Each structure stands twice: as C-alpha cells, then as structure tokens.
Image 1 (cartoon, each protein chain N blue to C red):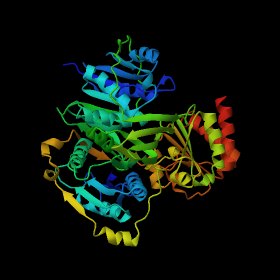
Image 2: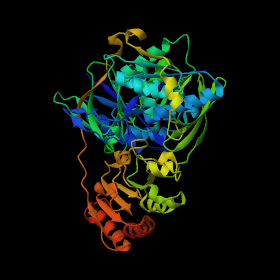
Image 3: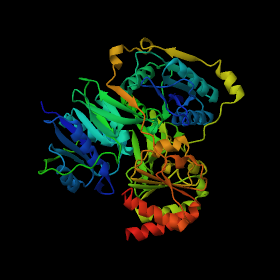
Image 4: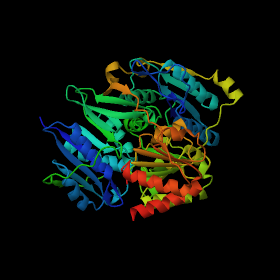
Length: 258
Length: 327
C-alpha cells in the first residue's frame, strides 16, 4: 500500500504571537509538525506496520519545512518530498493544486491512501486536504478518530461535532485525522540517524508540471492584527455561598448577560 | 449586473440551524445592493423548512429532497449541492463553518476553481467598497483581514457560528424550487452508522453559555456537577486539553488551539489553569468566569470574574443561585 501523508510545519501551540512590521514574528519560534498532521504520520506508520507498504511525507512550504519532513522520516516515513517554490503562496487554492499536481506525477508509486490533518493550527481553514480529494476525484472522510484498512476498503469513525459517523470508503481515498486517532510516537535515536539517509526531494513548480498562472491565488491578506488584550477582572470575596450569589448578581446587573 | 449569493442551509434535528440565518446575515453584509440571495436546502422531508427559509431570501430556495440525503454524506450531498449551484450559477456561496460546512465548502471551491475564506467572524468594508473578511489565525491569537482577488471566479465563505446576528425575515418570501431528483453519481463511500451522541444536547459551537472543565475536575465523575450547571443554564459542556488527555471526557469536547474555538456570551472555566493553547480557544468569549483553587492560575488574568475556591464546593452553589435567578 502506498501511503502519502500531507503535512504542514506550524508554530508550537504554546507559542505566543508577536507582530513586527505588520507580520507575524518567526524568529525564536519553536516549529513543529502541525499536531493534526502528526496524527496522520503516526497512523501511516501503524498501517505500514500492519499491512506493509511505503510512506511518503509531502509538504508545500519554505526550506525550513524540511525539518518537519525529517521528523516524519525519523518517526518512520520512508521518503519525503518538499514542494518549495516562492511562487506558491499561502492561498489554499494554490497549495491544493500544487499537491494534486505532485500526486498526479507519482505514477510509478500511485497513491492508495492519502492522510492529512483535520486542519492546521495556524491558518485553521481546513481546506487543503478536502480540496485535494476533490481535485483528485477520490472519496474522503474528514475528522477521523479510528481507521482500519481491509484490502481496498477503509472503514473510519468520524467525529462530526460530537456525533460519531461510521463510513466505508473504497481506496484510493483521503482521510484527515482528528485528535484521539492515536498517540504519536517520538522519533527514536536510531530513527533520527536513519532519517538522515532517507530520500528527501525538493521540487519546484516546473518539477510538478505547473506554471505560475496555474496556481495564481484567489484570496489575499490585507492586514493582520492582534486581538485586544483582556484585562483581569474582579476576584469575588466572601465564603463560597456569598461568592456564588455575588457572581449571579454581577452577571445580571453589571455584565448584563443573564 | 445583479449577482447571486447562494446560502447552503443546514438542518439539525428537523430544524434549520441558527448558523444558516447567520450566514444569510453575512451574505447580506457582503453583497452589493442589486445582488440577490438564494438558498440551497438538501435533505429529506424538508418542504416546511424550505418555506421557512424562503422568508429570509429574495432569490429562489432550491430544494433537493431525497431519502438518501436524510443524513449528510460527503459525496452524495456534494453532488446534490453541485447540481443546485449549477442552476443558480452564484458568484458567491456562504455556508456555516460547521462539521458539514467545513467538509462541503472546500469540495465546492475545488469544483468551481474558486477561492475560499474560512471561519469568518466579521465583515468590514474596504475603501473601494469591496468586503473584507475578518478571520482568526492561530485559533484567535491573531486576526487577519482577507479579500478575494478581483475577477478570480466564485467566492466561497464559511462563517463561524455565534458571530453574526441571525438575519431578520423579509417582508415577502422568495420562490421555492424543487430540483428535479437527478440520480446521484456512483458513490465510492457509504455512511454505515450515525451515533447522535449530541442529540438533545446544546451544540458547543452555537452555545450561548459554555461550562468547561479542566484537570481540576479530577475524573469523569467530576464532570457531573458541571453537567448539572450546564443543564440549569441550557449551556454546553466543554473541556481543556488537560481534562481530555487525562481521559475525563471525550476529545469532541476539547476547547483550544487543538480542538474547538468557542465564542459564547458566558464562558465558565472550572478547574482550568489557562494554558496558552486553551486561552486561544475561548478568550473571545464575551464574559469569562474562572473558578480555580490556585489564585496564581493564569486563567484569572483574563477572567472578568474570578472565584478562588474548590469547584466541587462552588459549582453546586452556583447552580442553585442560577436556578433561583432564572426561575
């Protein structure tokens, strides 16, 4: 089974966001594999352990993204591809088109299963994976908490805002990971050593057969801002019963939300 | 020239979801003066809902009513939506940023080779009059204003629940058009079972009040008093990552940068210390209440009202007070 994992490198979730000259400051920030994509990497490795096959980790990003791909290789992916080209912007239309073009060129190792995260914790739009499935015209299931593969059939349990849906899909298919799917492993020391020798390709737009016009963005950012800082409010005094009564009174008279 | 803004309506337990009316309001804010709003309603036995929807839009309501569309099915619902959108040829499509909207919108965007702006919380007007869409980044640690590139095709927007007011009905209803039941394409996926764990409960994303528990809740059993408080307030129950990781509750309840982002009127954090990743998911709530034993907990730095104390003592007392106040 040929498994492709699409992943993105993001800020660690504990990072604060600081703006400098209207852009998000990246100096000194800890970067990680997007947590939801990390579940996808882990799930690919577990499927390979059970069924055999090859795992290719793919990303669209800057040169720095190679670190995230190396981590995926250290966890257990076999190969990696970094589509890195300044002409590909952040727009989800462009990124998904680049990934689709890449996957269509992998005819010697055609995809059986594509795994990705439910959304990225930075941009958070959750578009790229689902767009990719539509561009490749394959079925998908998003926000999956359990995945089993049997021959050419995948069965998933999907979280739909708290409801649980069981869905069967015929491969090739695309699945996005939700929290709870698994507990990602840490790369082992031998894994890290081996990862250094695993193939990591860097590809340009031409390498995947696209021209700049094919990925011209459809949306653009006008400006960035931080939310207004919240102020610490009142600590309520008295014994618990008095505090509870005071709180309900304040919600009614001061905050006017009751 | 008049253009069409299409809303894809969403139903839940036999009713139109609140977010559908919010999406109509968002489309009203974004559209030009001469543009019309149409709606697409997909489901089974939804004719009454179509009549209701028609009171809110000036364009047609396209209905696709089939037994096999009674529950959401990515491939089938998308095929039905595509057929309806083909007839409407909209310049923009608005959906809720919900489990269904998040799934359906990118498929539509890919099919129409369109741009999509997701999880919109507000719409502003640029100097040239075109809409600027405000949306969170890093789960609300930052915000961006985005616009669609001019003349780059259709525009797809998903709106975050609870951020736009619900649209008011119009003086007169638009027409209801029942789309001919074109056969679905051969499907490569099947929905085998749907377990409505949330049936009868308040939806976390749309809740006006959220009662949330953290590690301080100590066990699955410890969520009971929070659930009773939520019941008294008609609120949804949420949790921090700590509580989910510890196995006290389902990951579906998690609020934070991983998990859900909520923006209720009142957020009651019980036994939650306030890690940065949790704050990202709730700090846009209107009023934040924190109950925690530790007076140094970071949650108190952003809470409007804080109670330093044992949640197992405070929460039941609070439940009583709310019941008194609301009765």
